[in-house]
Structure formats: structure tokens, C-alpha cells
Image 1 (spheres, rainbow, N blue to C red):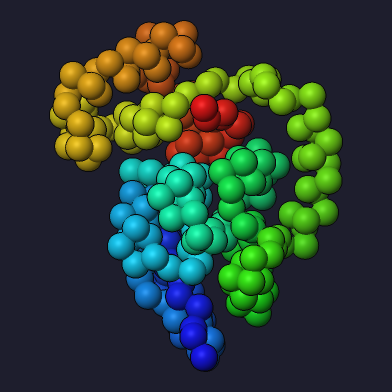
Image 2: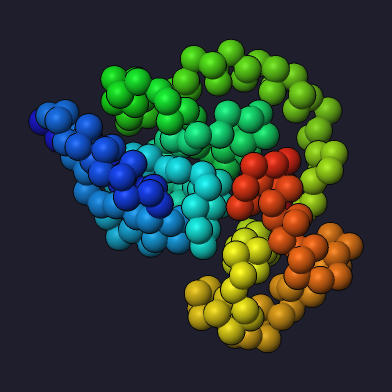
Length: 225
């Protein structure tokens, strides 16, 4: 029997160790790797090609929503299950738009996570009961939004979201350039574009926006082109 290969993505060591111990007890599941942030998750997925990625949302360097989007872009066959402490509708909506196969709350019972992994691997979607109940409401909210940004959202490219998160985490242009593998001039251009699009004129303002948009903390939605 081929086991379901799983990549764990969680920045808290204790939580990650608990998940690893839980999944190792299952005969049909194999933990093939672990990542501490979204950027590591994208890199390891491309290398290990796991069947399922169990992904946290709030992580340094690259948040779980953008990491999910990038993972599914480079390895479409991989299924991503988001496991988060956040239950707000905005997070659920962002995750669904990114292409995740499911959304589970961290207080979910252990047996539910195991079932979700098996369901995702089988090509099905899976959600915590409380999340599932709200999905119909989210679909109704989405009616009429096709072709236009959501209220209060800014249209940022995937790279701009990455740069914005690193700026909000306090990285200087040189550090951001090194982290993303681009030039300092390119980082400066992205910063200028962000300020222009968002109507913000300083780093503090960008940081506040990143928090309100849910990129580094809880908050409202952000639309990605």
C-alpha cells in the first residue's frame, strides 16, 4: 500500500511536533518533510512533491495563503489543507480563492485531521463543521463580485504581497532583496508600486495595511491578481 505523503508547515515547534506524532501513528500516512514558514513550504513542495500539505496561515516570510497559491502553481497535483487558529470568514475566503482543498481549525479533533488528509488525497474537499456551515454564506457574498475587487481590497501582484509582508516584518530593502533573490532596485520599485497603489507614503503605513489585510495578523481580505 502506497502511503499518503504529507508535508507539515507550521512555525511553532511544539504544534509541529504534535502533528508529526499524530500522523506517524497512522499506517497509511507518512510525514516526508516539515517547514517553518511559507517560503520553506514552497521550496520543499517542489523538491518532495508531497500528496498533501498541511498548512498554517500566520507564518513569517511568506503567509500560508500566498504559499498555498505558489505551491499549487508549481505542483498542481499537491493538495493543500489549511490548519489555522483563525476562523474569520475573510481567511476562509482567501484560502478557497488560493485553491486549498480544505480548511480546518486547530481545535479540530485529531481524528478529523486524519480524515481530512485522506479525503484531500482522494480528491475531495474537507472543512471543519463550523467552517462548512458558513461556506454557503460566503458563496452568496461572492455573487456580483466577479470582475471587480472586493470592497476595501487592493489588487496586488503575488510578488507585491511577498514584499509587503517582509516590509511589515521589519526587513530592510537589502534583506528583502536577499530573501527573495532579487535586486535592491527591484525591491525599491515594488515598494514604490505598493505605496502608489495603496495611497500610502511611509513604512509604518504599509505595516498597518499588512496587518489590516490579514497578511501578518488577523484582518480583512486582500485580492491578488
